[in-house]
Image 1 (cartoon, rainbow, N blue to C red):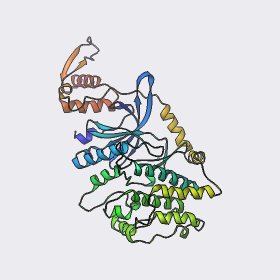
Image 2: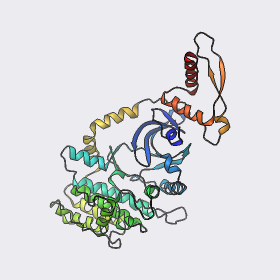
Image 3: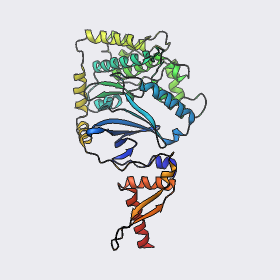
Image 4: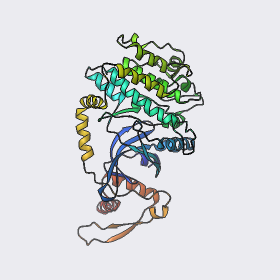
Length: 402
């Protein structure tokens, strides 16, 4: 069995991952799998978190690993109500991982789709409220300095609907700060080739130029334009067409698609979407100020409670399922094998009981190699038994059918 096959074996409830217990697979993408997990502590302490496990084929690239670690370390320094917090970063076995705040809610891509399915146009006021929260998180990150006052120069690089999540209590969080930089590196096959969510990139980003915080402002403008008008701004049959559209294409004012969009909102969007970054908003705070000024004067200014009620209506059934999952008592499986560094322990004898019902139980030693023990561990976890029980069953079947 290959290392990658071992690494990405079928998930089973209660699987141990270092000090964490995996409860449920939330999502799986090209670069990583995300799990709902629990961290246990003293006196019955438990905390729900999300584990993002990087797939093993990416871990084989030293450049990717180094950039991933560097960017994740930067993101871990960010602590803000509108940014998903990173708690832990490291490697367990062959898996690099991020342990981060678990947000009970839905990303904006799913929210917009759910709203469309029930025939409710997503309210413009909610879109602006969410964008304002994103601006606040972005401004904090863009302005972040280290302990000596030096700018960290954090740029998100992947402001998309999937990375904006609205919790069921109405909070707004930005996910995956800076990780796109490492992901793009790992997914690039040829020099000068860009891969990723092109439709939301700034002109400078998709042309592989140096990017700064103003790139995130453009991406947020693209996202907000889509939320308000219902139209994807940059599309095409292939990457080249999309890039040409971003760099050279005309951006129609949002009122072209929705005449009811006010002039003030239109001005906010068009300024965020300036192709020349020197003519864009020069900070996320400036964009947030204009959005909040409009909402303050508007006939309806939504609160977090309004957002929460709207999202809860769309995902009423999902919330009940999630509530049951979160309240479920999960029985952790046996601790994982020691890490690769301790091969002596991995190759030591495994003692099993004689399970022949006609004889007294006896202890026997079975010599198991490092690789075979890892394979047996995966099989035992999938069948929710201990390694000793698995080996005993193999011996029993061998004696029965020899």
